[in-house]
Length: 479
Image (tube, rainbow, N blue to C red; front, side):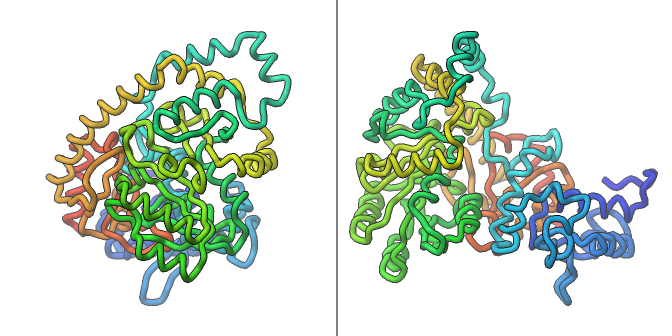
């Protein structure tokens, strides 16, 4: 709330609030600021105070005024014709990579807003838009015990004084091979390559199989970080509508005829953001198209730990012929351990390994060995079961609260995420909820090209409090 007793004027407080959100990317490039009237009503100030605050943002080069449309966040700080240095004191917040992405693909760079929200704490309240479980859900005694076991003086010398195995720690790859076998994905330890998280694995696959300008089929709605990453690499995105049983096969077939795509990126099980699961019939047709039109499939199974083992997976049906399996442990175990992996067709392993070596050399063997112990001793499996049970209860509570608040579920509630229709523009709603200390995930973030949406993704684990839904309903009524 703005404070009249503050040493700063109301104008300065309001301008500072917006400036911080823009610099921390909680307000993404291209986002529209509230109208002068709306902002004045929301903050209990006069329209002239808002105009003065927006003028300060204009002077700082953080926003631009568009005739008869309002004020919008600039695509980059400072003069768009300069470079990162033009941002002055804010240059440190902009890497060259962010600058290039913003210049070439201003829409997808909005994807980093949620990521930055993880590092710039909005408030101490549970955050509905976050993509991970609350930290207290992930706490365990077995993880520290596993780390202690592999960090004896002898082990530290063994692991730390030389580069590890290029493919990744052999004990972890053996454990992963067994784990994948339980999902009917046939991968020997020699077909598994570890990575610095699942996102790094996806990046390795893209850099190995694709060249700038290559067409890539992606699911829409889908994970905006993947859209932004592929865009930044110069790929041509072909959005395929995602339905309850899988992608729109007619659209895929048309893309195959017209564009000859090189890759299809899929989340088959508990798709993000809808939590849809692929049906066997759709899976078979996708594999037929891949064989007929000669493209690879990368299957991101990020949510496997909370999914039923019998769920349909393309890699299981295909036997790792045209498919590459990607997994990780950030969602279920330890986000900061950054351990991911891929299981690939034998003939692609050396190419993928070359790409890994060029980007990271090897991966940290100490944490990989600790993770192997957690898997081998059954601790990860039991931990996942506890999380699933807790999530089922949380989902039930969250769904009731959402329905009572006037929402409609656009997809059957399942998994970690709910795909909710609010009936109002969620970009605008997200800005208003931010004032109340809540970070939302508006539907526009999940499209290859940002466009207004009444949908939002909620995290069932962080939307169990009636206080959030009360404030949500209150703000929706005002819109």
